[in-house]
Image (cartoon, rainbow, N blue to C red):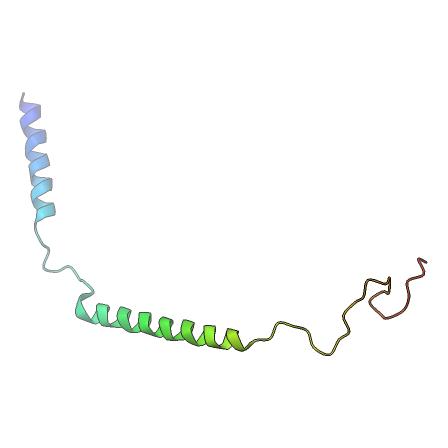
Length: 82
């Protein structure tokens, strides 16, 4: 049974060290939150601007004739097959 008490004491020391707060540990704090919030707001404004600009885009082709179903090729000449 001495092995059981050694392992139990080791387990308890590991649990105690996990529960303690390390004062030397660096955390993001308020400054990290402010930087993250500013970046989130900037991304929101960029997405809003992108949606507004994408709404202005006209996806229809203008100035070119639409190909007809009468058998003409893309260069305007009638297709002869060879």
